Length: 131
Image (cartoon, rainbow, N blue to C red; front, side):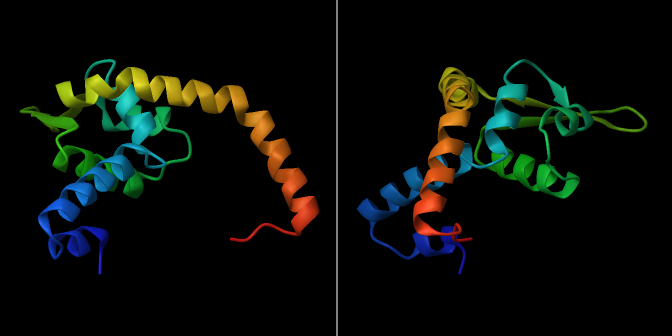
């Protein structure tokens, strides 16, 4: 059962908490942060996102874009051209997140070496990592 389906069957106060958790899962997802930062700069095309979000597959980009659009964080605009040109822009709700996402990204970049060192020390003390 998907996380969304589990949330449907619970009480109202738990449903609110579930919605918050789902929203945080969405914006904190592996690919969402990069996509939302890029789309907050102005309209961006699929291929530009594919180049900017390092390591993302076409399929995962498509799925993530759909989910962000579904959650009201991205707007998809199809230009009536041949072939159709599709652009994505951050919604006001997503643009409100922009500074927080940039701050989180900068924090991760600043602490990347420290995190790697901590992981290596932990692995030496406890054996190989799980997963």
